[in-house]
Image (cartoon, rainbow, N blue to C red; front, side, top):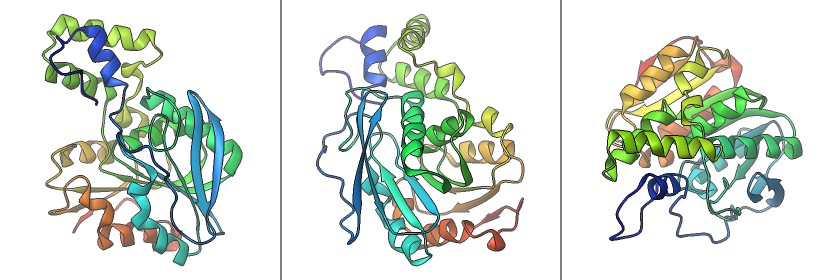
Length: 271
């Protein structure tokens, strides 16, 4: 997830710390730049969480990915406002304007629960990348949302922890030690498994993924879709992992899905 200091020899301790330390260079204001927006500050698991809201109507929460910020999801806002929704964004712990030096899927999921206690009922969540796993983990823990749109969702936190350890040259036993250290710090990577959680949920869900995603392969999104009863998945070409967030077809598909009469549950398709 983040980088280890240059020239330092990787150890289970240093890699574990890097795994939960997002490399976020821009901690400037995350304002939406939209007339009528208001700022919300809440107490989160590791400090202040900064959120913005704009509009009136049913609430749609936008959840960014790892090492991102709420403005990453800004392209969805005009269409959501035009469709009559209230839009809420938030910078996850240790991202954007929110406080904290370290973060994780469990910590971020708790921040969404804290946020809901302030913003109230949520009609839908539109999430990207690791933000999808955070959203699903929050739902498992009691976050209330009627519908979910997951863009390029990951599968198992354990897989990413192991891959991260391998990337930094840790041996198998050292990766095991790293995972143990993470658990001691409250980050149980075994406990976050999106396909496993999906099998227990019945929320209407739309999964959007690009066939050329090199960060989270489309096969991972397909695994999540297969595990989620009644899911709908749309696959796209040429949108990668980040460009997908600014593509009109993606935005239109997500916003359309939020209106129940426009849903065809259980169908799959490609674009």
